[in-house]
Length: 467
Image 1 (cartoon, rainbow, N blue to C red):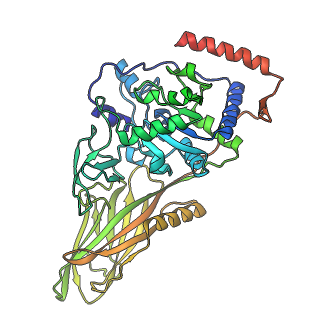
Image 2: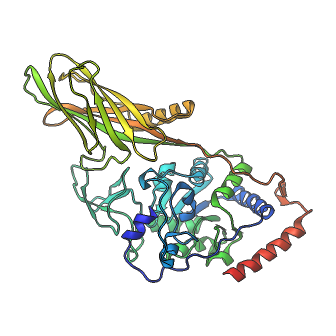
Image 3: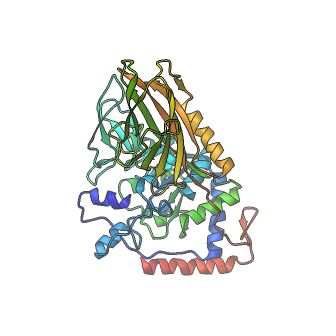
């Protein structure tokens, strides 16, 4: 993600400090800070999370300013890192899912993100409780009516340019634009206004994995401090706002959040990825003995949209052994055959998945009968996806598939059927913490407190030297 994004950005000389040394709190100091943060969260009335690239590195997405970050390596003239998986297959990590659980529990009131990876939306954070300040690589917006479209493929442009697609609202049809900002673009009011509002309301803002160098976004958390709220910064490198923090934690974000969730007695939910496809069947209206029909497997976002998670499709005909099988590798996947109209039959489709999916394929039995009285249905997308997720969790497997709706193709004979498929299942395990707690009933235990204060003072001195 950051690889492609960095290449698309216009050139800018001043990109702030990069490649600073990483700092790590000693284990027992980290333990005490984790418990202190958990106490802050328990006492908060309006908690806001402010996130940066550091929460997505565990998802296989490189950061920008770390020792091996994109901009750091560019400055050093070194080769850029290779992404662990295709960007469109990146899935929410432990921190994303923990935040989603805290939001669901009513503890986390709002999320402000500088990331463009779309992982907060995938994790389950409601759109109305999320400000994506710098945009979302998977989100388009209509320039006329403002309707948003979240895609399963990366939008081709950045800088709020036209993407070549149009609004699907029949009363609009406006041109769609990407939502990712370039350097010179101002933060959109739709994101900035609620972000400012919640920062002013917040009694606790937790900054997670951000260098807090990009303006004006980096100044938002200070609005809480000015109103008497607490600021917590969790980052491996120093930030310009460290002196404003009530609590400063130098550790991997996932490790800190895992510890906090343990102390708060909240489970980190697994992530179940559900992708959708559309299978359309068309055939001539004239009722001749033989029918030339076409089967198409494509994206639900339109015939010209990519279907990135499917690598190939194998089609066979168990009821009609004389009909030639097919191996389809080009998108959109199209199959055309001529068969006897009077005898219904089945097409056996094997959908082979690409890199980043947890299962290699799924099998779909598709009936063809050329009857005008084809059954049409609509089960409700949300209900189908929830049912699939539950099945995946019960079985601890992916590959489940279910139809969502079937409708008639307009102006011709045939139908299109939308399917939902579980393509990945990720469980997040708690990271190991210190076995002995340093906090008892909300207060740090007296024994050992002097050594903690001494080491904290030494840590502060080291920070000054390294920064």
